[in-house]
Image (cartoon, rainbow, N blue to C red; front, side):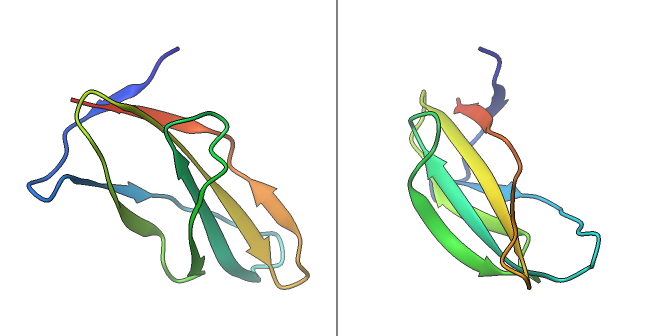
Amino acid sequence: ESSDKVFKDLNNEVTLSWSASDLDNDIVSYEVYFSVETPPTDLAATLQSTVTSMKVSVTADTVYYWKIVVIDAEGNKSDTGIYNFKVL
């Protein structure tokens, strides 16, 4: 299992960031799933389409998993797949 290694900031947080595109250009929101388990099933936030990053609290020496679900105006959902990282 390969994971990126990241450093947390002074507030014990890291920033998740993403970008998305839609054929009709009608993305309305993002669901951010974040967890220490895979697949990540904990809905951390539902964000407006203008927001493409989010800070999350983390603990050192822990592997985290996250994914973004993109939702468009018709209610169609698209999943980014699962990303992971280890906090040093």
